[in-house]
Length: 509
Ligand SMILES: Nc1ncnc2c1ncn2[C@@H]1O[C@H](COP(=O)(O)OP(=O)(O)OP(=O)(O)O)[C@@H](O)[C@H]1O
Ligand SMILES: [Mg+2]
Image (cartoon, rainbow, N blue to C red; front, side, top):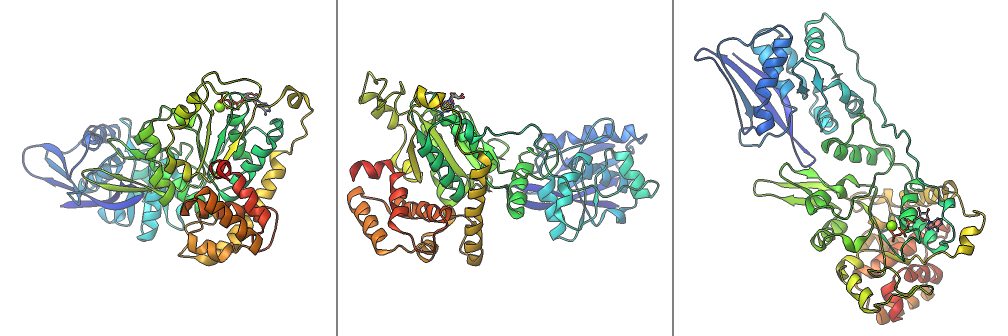
């Protein structure tokens, strides 16, 4: 007399099917859960017992065994409560066993039989769809589950509602697909930033091609302000991207309203962030900030203040676009294709190279501070711009700068050009932006005319550019050409502007 309910377990963004088998047998009364449960799963016994009690049911005085198969897969999280409770109800004969066969079930139970939201509902719903099953999930998560396609979804608020639905005494309707409401979200407008034309231009290029950008300048020059304007000029997520990003946020339990994300994520971790917080990991492995910033922006303000090891750990994800967390018992991969925007002062006191205010300990102060960033990390940042202090005169000028809306329109146009170009490259390309074009693809899409080639050769010779820097310069040049609506071939001006954003190269030219 075994009742079976389907549920899932998560390993990274992979969803593994788990079978909850419940047996009621004769013997000494007891309630055991086996199959590598962690603490939260083991504690579900008490929640299930209390929730059934709230329905007026008590567990039979028999031997109750719950097996979570496969037995060698670690089961983590509180979402096993609901499948265990339904398995018990089926084994007790309260609901028919056959009614649960087609469903994947997840949800946490409260002591009063309420069903509380859990993380990972969207990936679980997608998994159910792929396996031609339906889904039972908490009421609060119905809005995200409904995006998974034409499957039947039950999103009850409490256990009684669900039991009544299964018995046919009350009918629940399918939840509506929801988009996340960003109530009160407003990025500062670019027109509020006075002066800083070069930095604004660099920000526009970075937004258009999803390039990494480092802003260097004295305190109070507007670096953090410029970065916070970025969400206002980035295009909205494409539907496929929105689903991918929302899956990661769902796994991290960061979709509180239960709706799909519409805006590109903008993550802004403090510089005291630990390596697991940034890359992912921890005792119960979770996506880190870089994965939460997938298809969006990771803004690292005061870059040299981050721990050295933490910064170096960014090197691999910046190149491969995913975070691989290796643990003794599991290797877990989270996608992390993010755009890195960073800001820093040129030295500890902040005034190195400032014409108005001298750095008293130059050049030692700057060298020590900048040495905290390794060459390989800087090599991965496509654009470096100086953000000089704004003069009082500039600040007093009436705001004449372009509004974010105007810039956003240009960025969107450039992204559309890229999308049209790269959609043909299925299989080779990981994404649809210039920043994601591989060397081979670049050869095809960014041919240089002879003047451009000559300038590039000169830069490579004099600047001792790495192969990576070479391709990154080409990618930025491609974006500059796309922004200006130029045709296929890159000309000298595009390469020259792109080179101007590589401080290291320029200083040796
Ligand atoms: N170019 C600017 N135009 C208008 N306001 C500015 C500008 N630069 C700075 N400000 C004002 O100064 C404040 C501080 O700027 P912000 O925090 O961006 O400086 P920062 O360059 O990040 O400095 P720090 O290196 O100390 O972090 C802003 O909130 C804004 O009010
Ligand atoms: Mg700042």
